[in-house]
Image (cartoon, rainbow over all chains, first blue to last red):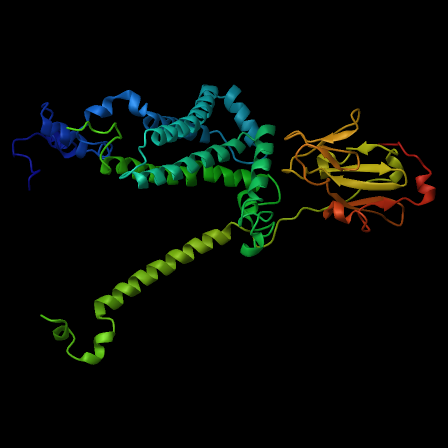
Length: 259
Length: 184
């Protein structure tokens, strides 16, 4: 087999080579292997086009959106160690995080501000893609994936809104879920409710809240959606989104000058 | 090799071959089990029977409520305002008809005001400002044989049903004569 070390090779060398399959001389071939042989880097192109370095075409909005997502994931996991999603404890745990837990305040606020920034950046990213025409062929499908990711970002923001369990959270979710009760076909007050047969107990609002009003079942459902279901979906779609960028000809840039 | 050579008898030509049969069975089983899984998880989101808290409670004597006053004694516990207007007494369900927040009673301005989007209601619960499309709902009220007031928040009356029995109580003249004001 190719990877078999020569008989004189030491154990340390063998371990090193079992992880890294490329050499480190600064050669074009090694540079490409560094990208393509790493699971973390392989979504990147092995070569970057010159226009990809121009900041003012994309403003780096997609990358910044992803960065804020990573910040919310890391800080979110930290917050989960101290937060119990019940009506009895949620607010107290949130307050204790701020005033009782060392560095809890900065963790919570990093999560909060990164989440706000992510919503803003995702919208600006969409605006940039629209204004620069980057949704056009061959990138139509990636635009659709992007719209789904935008919706997921909104849903993550909405579900996270309830978790502090303060007055703003409870009434904002009361209003938001009542709007869901008026959604076409899915809400019992919406148009077409008689066609789908949804009732006050089985419509989208009831599905979100798990009860007649915002209470214990609602906070648990929002917590699971916020911490598990929606992030998993988002990661899945992000993988598709990033992979498609490369398959559709690399990062979007200005049209090539006519020869 | 031609197709007829694979299937020597022409009778069997319209049947699925062994591989095709197992392929279809495999994909069919996978599709069916995936579908069953999705359906079961979707059904799991709605309970078999709703968890219901008790809805009926004793609200004291009618004379506990002053004439013309809106009482918030049972706002925190039962989400209702008890209102006594002349010889009539009713209970307003404190859920805004716009998007479901809890309107507060402002005595000095003589109106309910919703904190979420500014809907205003009169002491009778009639909407007169803001986005609320309908008057506030009422809940069932009645007097028992001992003359005590009962309220059932499980039975609601939209404004089109305010004339129905239970949407309000007419106080008998001997009770109405007491203008109230004890504990309200």
